[in-house]
Amino acid sequence: MTAGHVTVGRVTAAFPAVRGRRLRTGRALRRLVAQTRPAPADLVLPLFVKEGAVEPVPVPSMPGIVQHCPDSLRRALDGAARAGIGGVMLFGVPTRRDATGSGACDPRGVLTTAVRDTVEQVGGDLVVMADLCLDEFTDHGHCGVLDGHGAVDNDATLEHYRRMATVLADAGAHVVAPSGMMDGQVAAVRGALDAHGRQDVAILAYAAKYASAFYGPFRDAVESTLDGDRMSYQMDPANRTEALREVDLDVAEGADMVMVKPALSYLDIVSDVAARVDVPVAAYQVSGEYSMIEAAAQRGWVDRERAVLESLISIRRAGAGTVLTYWAIEAAQWLT
Ligand code: PBG
Image (cartoon, rainbow, N blue to C red; front, side, top):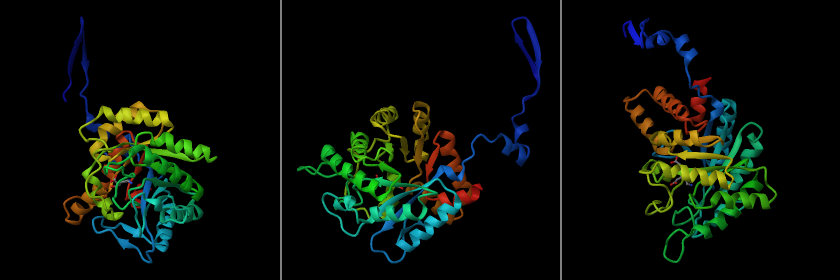
């Protein structure tokens, strides 16, 4: 832009040439003025743990991601702690499933066992979070139990979530993350934890969780049996203000942190939520977001490291303090 004159009332003043590029001229200057700096501690790594596995099992639709056996889980946790990331989010892949997802509440179940082992190994360095949902444990694949008509029964499901919360707390989880989008799930989980004497266990609420096609590869990762969709409980991608209502409800019910999911296609929601609440805001960069970049990078269509970092920076810039990402360890290494 060139210099010129500006007239305000009777006063005419010269203004100098405005140059946006002045602050972009060198690496050091760009670094100095960078507004968003994701740090390793902002990142949470989701991990899949497979019951009975004796070696890690690759997830075909998520190159580089495996279902862990105890040994590979230990190595991953070691890497996570060394990379200085913020925490891990554990998901269980059970061998048996039933109508009520009873494995979710089994103290010797795959998820509970993984939580116990994880806390023992890295609980001093990493925040250990557990997904609190029935979908990996039900034979129909829904996030709750079904009523006589095959619909997800909200209030009956809450009873299972209560029990699951206490079992996960007993296993040592620092944070439980109800992700089933049942109404009242945060209040139910908080009430159960408190009644169990576990006021110390925090709740990360999947508050604005959309019914998204980007969960596709995750369903591979947890061997989901879902036949149908989750439209009757997860949010419609068309809706924006509804996210604020969901978040308000969860905060009122006692959520210590709230999450928006997916991340990249929902940055408006991340931004709205961050402006609205005074609890920490997380966003989940989901499986499909991971696989899209991996697939394009494999073909040489995008620069993998730059694309990954740009996506993480964008999610942080929109207002999420915490990002759940399958690249947590690698990104942490790039960021330090
Ligand atoms: C439900 C759950 C899902 C994801 C996290 N928790 C799947 C779903 O709602 O269908 C998806 C995560 C991802 O896609 O990476 N327990």
